[in-house]
Each structure stands twice: as C-alpha cells, then as structure tokens.
Image (tube, rainbow over all chains, first blue to last red; front, side, top):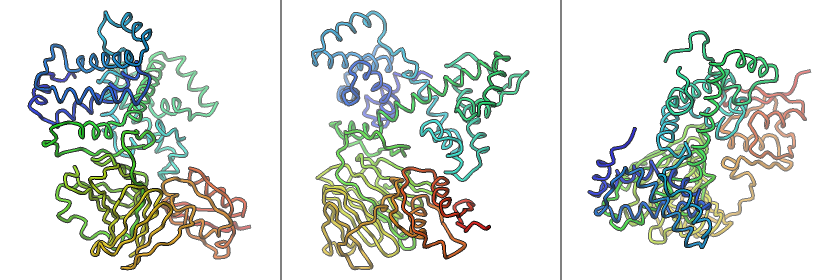
Length: 184
Length: 340
C-alpha cells in the first residue's frame, strides 16, 4: 500500500523523530542497494543514504515534495550517487548514466527494491510462528540441511518438512499479487 | 484460501524439492508430476521465484544494517533533544556489522544463575528494556542504542537502557554474553554482573563468571574490573589478561583454555583430553548434558577438533573409534559402551 506522503511529511516537519525513524527503517536498505548500483561501493552507498536522511531532517521545514516521498527518496539517492561519481572523476560512467537514465523516471527496476515486496517478505517472515520462521531461516539463510536443522532443534525431519511447507505456502499467498500469476 | 481443486497442493513436497532435499528417485517422480500438470508446475516455479526474492531481501538486509545506520544518523542530527526512543531489534547474524561503529571492547561475561537474578530492575534502569534467551538459544544478538553489539549465550538475560541518555552506558547481565562495545570516550560502558562491575576503558575484552564467581578475559584494550560496592577495589586488565572475582577477592590469572569461547565460535579443540572433560566443553557449546553409563569410558583420551559441526556428527565422531554409542533425548545425552 502506498504511504501517505502528506501525513508522513507533516509529521516529520513537525519534528516527529519516530515517524522519521519509521521512514528511515522502511527505506534505508533499499536505497543503499539502489545507490550501490551506481557507486559500486557499499560504504559509499551507505554514506550517501545516511547523508540524504540527515539533510532531509535538517531541511525538513523548507522541504516541498511534489511527487511522492518514495519517488523523492529514490530520485535524491540517484542524483547524490551521480554526484559522487562525478567527484570521483568517473566522467564516462557519469555521462553514460545521464544519457541512459535521464528521460524516464529514476525509480528502480529491480523488483526487490520495490518497498512493497520488501515489506511483504519481512512481514510474512515476522508473522510466521517462531519455530516455523526459525526453521525457514536456518534452511534458506544459513543453508542447513533438513537433517541438520532437526538435530540442532532436537525435532524430527518430518517437523522440519511440515514447517518449511507452511512457510512456503504463506510466502506464496502473500506474494501472489506481485510475483507470478497463480491464484490459489 | 482455495486449494486447486484437481490437485491438492502439497507444500511440504514442493519445499523439499526446492530445498534440494529429495533423493534421485523422489526427484524423478516429482518432476514427472510437474510435467504432467502445468498448474502445479507454475506454482512450483512461482515458489522458486519467491525463494529467490526472499533470499535477495535477506542479503540486502544483511548487507545494510539498518540498526547500526540509524544510530549513526541519529547521532548526527543537530537537534537531538527529542530523541529519546531508539528501538533495538534482535539480529540474526552479525557477519556484516559495518565499519561505522568502532569497536572499543569485546568481552564475555558469565555468571552463576543462582545469585544473579535479584535486583535486576533498579532505578538506574527506569527506561529499561530487556532481552533474554532460552537454554537452546545461544547466539541471540542485539544492537544497543549506541551501536554496541551483545550476543547472549543460552539462558541469559540483558537489561539495558533504551537510549543511554545519561553520562554512562549501563547494562546488567545475568548468564553469559559476548560484548562488542562501540567506542565513546565521553560515555563509559559499564556492565553490572552479580557483585562485580566491569567498566570499558577503550579496549576489547571477554568476561565469564559462574557460581559466586565472575571472570573477565580481555581480547584487546583496557578494562576496569571492580566490586560494585567498592569501586576502589579494582584491577585493570589489558590484552590477554584474565581477571577473576571470587566472593570479594579480585585477582589476575592466566587462562589457557582454548575452548573458552566455544559457545560463541562453535570451534572446539581437544588435545589428549579425557572424554569427561571433552563432554564438559560440548555441554557448554551445545547447551546439552552428557552422562556416561560406565565410569571406565570417562577417561578415554580424545584428540580431535570440530569447527561448527552439528552435534550429532560430533557425538558420532567421538563414539565410533572407541566402540561407543550414544542416546539422545532432548538435551540429555548418554554415552554408552557398546554391548557385544
């Protein structure tokens, strides 16, 4: 769901740090990932996005956003990244990007950089029962075999199977509007 | 949710297939099924994409640590007066902790569970929060408001201030933990543990304690180790130093136990160690309780090492060469002499 740019912005302009933090948490990793595409350096990508948020806070009272907050953040990340490239003297890279990316919107094309998908994955994971999400993480993020998970948690392989199936089903249900076209 | 009518969707099987958990035969049979049923095939391929996506989200999160970044940004905002709440969120992995925080100190503290649980919540912790771990949850981590990282061993608890607003950064520990403390010369980091107080002076160190007994092992830097009620009764520990507090008596010793940090590193090294001592290390590392049905086998000498090895493989490797077997029931393990 699209966030209400006006309300969020108003809260931030009034100095509501909690709203600002919410915004930061929702976008930070995605914007860094986006900046990384241009600057190819994680530390620099993080610096760009942190700097952007600092400026957003400092200038909040004078800030006017005509599009959405989301479009603004991506656009600003994009321009700040190019700025960094220019300073670095990577002229050709910079000009290349300007040539290729200028006309269209500078919103990301990568599906994962879309906040919706990112959020769905995170909320789905958070809403799984504790043990289920633990098992899922051990399998997918730590690369453990079912047998290893069963041993570590002192449960049967059958239970691991059942929980993995449960997780997979939950993800499919929640992602179906965004990935693939299957109606369950 | 409506199930596909002609075919019940078996998520367990799909998951097994996508996780590479099928043997050749099962795989063949499953692929045959997919081939004959396009709807099923589409679901499997969509789920496969889901998993890629989830993986990617996880990688982005691992790569860019939002907790660390937020504390960095927050500390750079000019008008910080309104900043009194910082959320602290447990992490799943610490692999990608960013250079943004300068680690001043690392330490492990452990304390006997028997005497540590009273007075956890005193006034100093008014706006406190706490995180605790169950017996089988060693490795649970959080990032505090200042960017410091604490990893709990099983059955431990940490009480901490949400925003470290005062002149000091104070936390209180029950159980055992590993600390990586963010550098801040203006605000000392102080850990209350049992009757001891450990003050980080800009270094990295490791603390451990058991019944009426607190131990500190310094990995780098400088640490002040004192009695909570008599701050003048203190010792300064530097790199490699090992401090022990027994009742009210503080002293510097040496620590030669290679497996001291095994619970965190999951690395165990045994050099001609008796099976009984080996099992103590395993108990600590995997949070289990090993017993023997025959005292004769306790003294078998063991020389081997394990690096992040699943518990069952560890036990298998220990038992097989000596013709032993083991029985596991929850966290209780009995090692037995094989009966002829």
